[in-house]
Image (cartoon, rainbow, N blue to C red; front, side, top):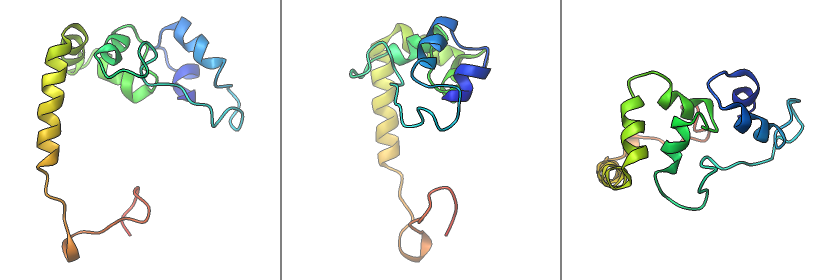
Length: 118
């Protein structure tokens, strides 16, 4: 998240400053430091991840892109304001993902490096 907190403009300045104390700008310094994706309620599964995005407090650049003037802003707004809708949609998505049939045998492969085919 280093590039996001030092280079991006779509991040709350107070939040960026607090993260900079954990992640120095120099590569190699603090590289193993961790920070939660949801700083408000880091150990609770709830809607606050989306609430944080609306306040420009997404940890990763890719997270903040979910609420940055694009087509997904309405989803972020909906989930930030209605936890029951978030829970319901999340459950439905997990059921859909559970129904995905993975390729097996000679039709598929287990990658040695998940970023590229073997």
